[in-house]
Image 1 (cartoon, rainbow, N blue to C red):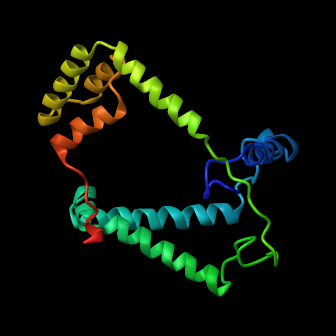
Image 2: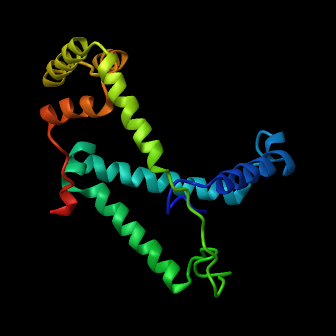
Length: 191
């Protein structure tokens, strides 16, 4: 309801939760293993989806695998193409989006958004400074160096990341190490 604008408000979170609870508790859908009883409609859609997914998988394999497809920007282009096609369908009224192209109001009611007070940001910054002051920075530096060495090799990075985290290395510090080794990903579709 409001998550595209900011963090969801308490009202939006409650509405989503109550909707799920009504479906789970009042519809009876959770009281049976297969509420649609193998309905042809669902089975046919599942078969179509499976066939289409296998066609994508085969096409990606023909390109040389997932990594090669990423390098070519294939997945990104497919996502953009599908999003554009979907938006065209909404704009033409071929697909319904409630509140956008059907059941709309002349006047838009203002949507209250959650605003995080500056005080909260300041508290978080101060907490981070305090952690950096009380942690063993020599151990943090050592673990981050071990992570960097592992990243330059072929080791599983997770144990090195976990050791760094246990010594209170920050996500930013860990990401900086990985950026030094691997660089920053540039989407080939943007070039």
